Image (cartoon, rainbow, N blue to C red; front, top):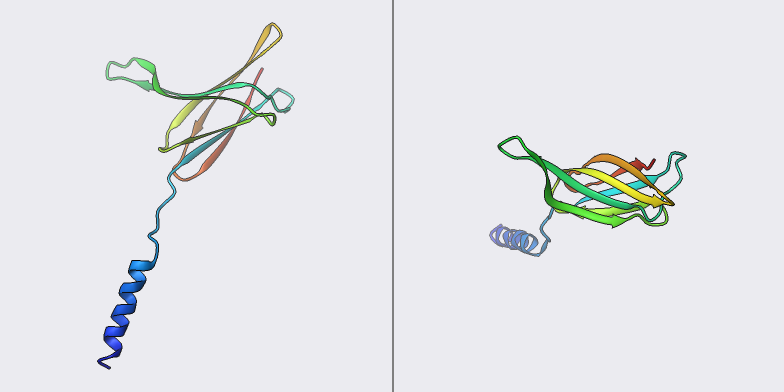
Length: 121
């Protein structure tokens, strides 16, 4: 019995030292899908994610944290953030003399990918 206890303790210590530690995935991914009023993908739309904040005086302004990227041929664009947040979405695309615009809001959660569709009109 004396030999079994030290061997068991040694094995337990080795398992604890060798096994990798668990690290939680915290990245927040926002996927914005741009579409027209018929549901067709809108490629090359300029997509901006931005946050509106209110200061102590009650004045609302756009925070410094923004992200901008054009949508791909499937009308999608993806953004990755380190922290959860709520962002406003503004998507625009010039078509001839008109500018199509779509707006929305996306709530990012820790360790997840969130999709939001925006219709440009």
